[in-house]
Length: 506
Image (spheres, rainbow, N blue to C red):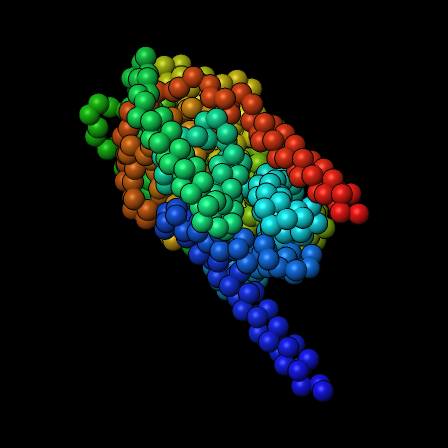
């Protein structure tokens, strides 16, 4: 008499494990839409498989578990580069690498799990659950872009960066793109009739984006050539005493490289010199001499009393500092440690802080460089936050990113960072130039197109004509507020509809 229930339990267990494995794999496949793979079609396809698993699932926690597993698979593949910073000094930090990936992937997947739980509660019918799931997942992406200083890396909507649909970011921003990819996946998951709607949606996105991409970008009133320096200083060698002069001399040689025409501005990457700005006078004068009179922007650390800043500075023809910007959106666990005072007593500091811990600057600045126009300087990680660009005190003519992507390794991290710079350019309607220590240094138009670049892990100097800007985009004027209102209003309607259905059934 007990064999039939036992057999049923065994069968349900196998089906449960199969569904969980399928959810994990579906998430991992969806991540292949991210750079450097750029297999954009696998993102809605993988997410559609995940949603198809979730829609018939019974029980709030079963739905939440499946969605969490899908998110864990997705983030484990998309963010595999997170192990690289711990391998720079593998003897000290290498043991942390797998835990960093597991904890980050599992932690970010909680947003997906919470969306699954909420959708199971809100959506009564299959279609209602799908709508609620799409809205909650898009809202979760928005929330993780702001909570705990934010981490909007590897949004599923970033898969559109490799397609003409990227251009829609000028209107709907990153979270509008994220909503669209989830909506497309849900339509595919719901069946053949809805799949036709998905095809129509995709055609509209593609066609509109292609038309926008084909529109010309105005040229600058005053042409300007910028030289981007990429020294390719490996992170594990960058601060070694015997290598410091090697990398400095390499940048000096690249600065002197002949160009036709000669550059109007020269840019070195983040932390381009090993000396604190406070004691770097001789080095700055040597840089100015090598520049042939062109102003130079470079990254350096500087001190004010007990505080240390990761800074970008502008030098004049004599090597005098004319502008200083201190990075204000610091990398948690990289440039500072949360609860740093307590952890410092245990000897725990950020990986990239050299055992000192950085202090945040006061906020975004726009430099007036005269003939070079007004520029918004950003340092590394700040480029992934569209709200950091919108927080500038005035609209710049262009955006400059100094970065050291050597921390991100040589596989996916640097390419995903570059992709997000392209997204920021489209969102704001502004050209972006980036000087990266190991690459990819690039010039990006206001349409998000990379018009010149230096490959990863190669030293060189790249002379680029600064592209022109577009008028302020809708997203540049409004930010994420319209997306937040749309998502919340949609969820209210879904909840009200579910409440009415429940009242009728009673």
